[in-house]
Image (cartoon, rainbow, N blue to C red; front, side, top):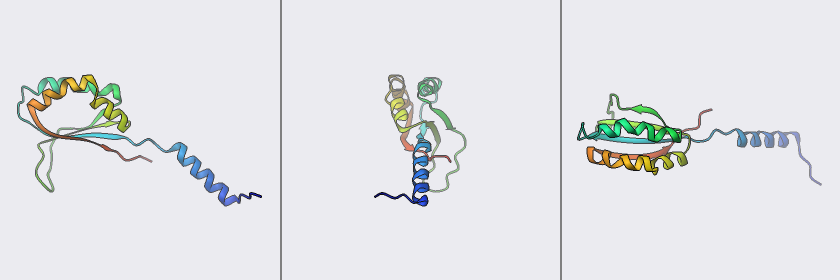
Amino acid sequence: MLSITPAASMAQAVTSSQATTAAPVTAIYVSEFEVTDPEGIKPYSAGVDATFAPFGGRYIVRGGTVASLEGGATKRVVMIQFPSMEQARAWYDSPAYRALRPIRHQSATSKVFIVNGVTQP
């Protein structure tokens, strides 16, 4: 005979509720770079927004002042938030962004990566 106590029933309901209402984890594309050819990077800068918008991407950091607190100074930082790691990877691997990447490679030195964001309550 199976018996469910009120406390166990409540815990099960909370666990089920949390599983169905958990917000998806976002992903953030991070680029630390230094422009080596200001004229050459212009086509990249002008076209990159249109490549990530269809994947739900939006800037959360786009250049600006960097105050280096530890380690070597970074010249420029860009962060683009996506709804998920899958969306971020789909953008990075998309034909539209693949066409722009060589411009960035020729006009800047960079380090890029994608990292999971935090789930907001």
